Image (tube, rainbow, N blue to C red; front, side):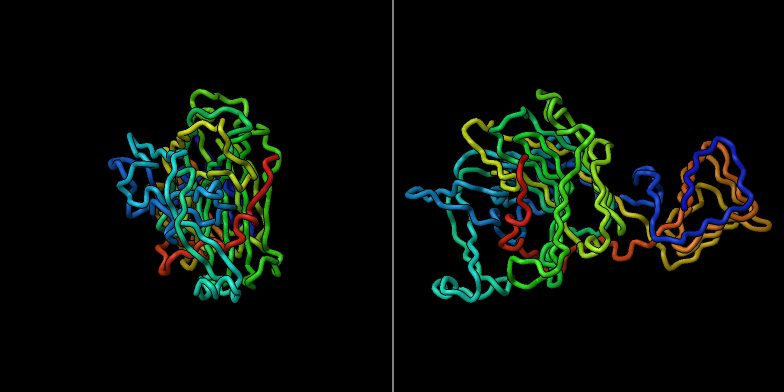
Length: 436
């Protein structure tokens, strides 16, 4: 049960709000809701290079191309397939594939030949591992062989140093000079990924955009089994395809001269109960599966270009327009302020002296108290109850959210204490989906 009020003039004498379930409403967006703090902001201001306190300019597991390419072209030493090749700008001062100017970060994909690492996986133990003198890798059931080949394409990427669990994630972006075509063969990706000893694959795709046809998707992937083979013994590996969107194919039919319809905003609201994906203010889909979502672990944010868009089974060809220019205006993250073990009571209080947090329980007003809320924005939240007693007045130009929420157990933002491991070797196969 919740109440969201916007008052010109009203008076509340006594109100008791209690919750009998674990569901709650989200009546205000974080930037309008004072219970939320901005915990991460990147506006790409004041520096022409990637902020080293916030970003790796490459994949921190040390390989730009973390999938094995399909084949190396005979006699050329060139790998014809490249997925997420981001190693070119391995130094944050490089500007070959990532340029920051006037508060905008541009990731640039090029079709110039470049040398980079390739990684092959083999079952462990096996004759391949033995012949190469390799022991088990981060995955105890596989060895991995790293070497260098020449690739056909290069691109830039951003990989956040911090990990997040729960929050409201937002990006504003555009793709320049895009047109509907069957020949583009690349993807724009804003996603989160991590793995641990208990969760082999934890992934949240805030968006994956197939630039061949403008298809916009959101996905959640969880593999809580760590049994060393491709089968999933735990049925928590899920892939959700986006349902029909009110705009059908969101990008198709929009302006093709100023980017994909100009600037767009993508958001993801990840709470303990559900994950809501939105695009330009329109709710795109909601993933409500707490039995699966509970296995998602803290993850960094990853922004990259897929070359080729193997996640959509899409290939680059001679008609693809290079360079590909993806502009990112900002990335922001909000999380609620938690005081879930703190009972709180306010007697004499105003909108300016009230501290909006999620408390264990919350009481406002009482005999002899004056609790006048005018000209402000307040969120009165408790995990057990919110009680408004006599003396409470909600007056002019006041917005007030009164609600009961469960505590966001496990919420955090942190620097990892251990090095990032790369995705599992069958990662691409698991997340691949058709472009139809």
